[in-house]
Length: 58
Image (cartoon, rainbow, N blue to C red; front, side, top):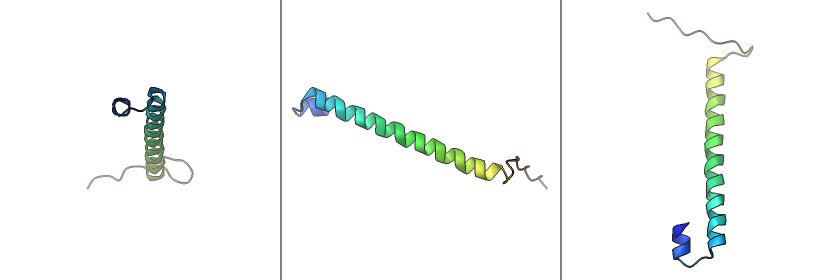
């Protein structure tokens, strides 16, 4: 935002860009967390939603 203001952009426009960037970061973080949770759920639970036991060490 500071770079845009120093470049001569209207401060309200710079603030709007900053808000858009913050929402993009929030969306990317939420999407990554949901994807990770789905992958972990698929790896740890069977089709009946039961926890898969860990294999015993030999």
